Length: 119
Image (cartoon, rainbow, N blue to C red; front, side, top):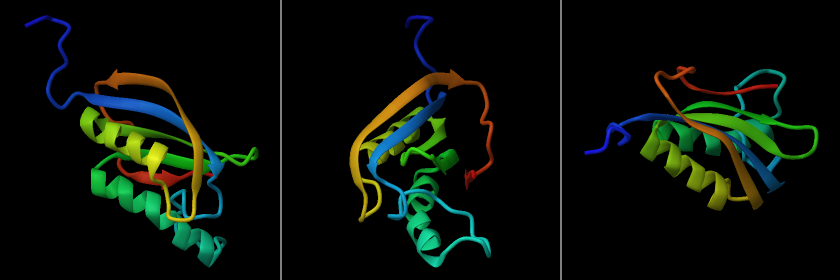
């Protein structure tokens, strides 16, 4: 076996940006707060539920240019599953035109303990 082979369960980190109709349509996870609208809270549940279901951690944020950006970390196979969801599925009301991934790398430990929304 090559010394370059990845260990089973290797941790991975990747940044993402999702383009299309992805804001205000249940795409990002939103922390429940008095300042958030009910629609945003309901919409945000889809990404949060998917991240929890897959067992990944990280964050998500709406940008001023109408995209959704964030970072996902976890075991490689789970991060790859979340990448697929961010590319092909999203929330029921979203329209994903494309998803860009960057800074994909193996990491030695997770930087987050859960999945959260940044403002």
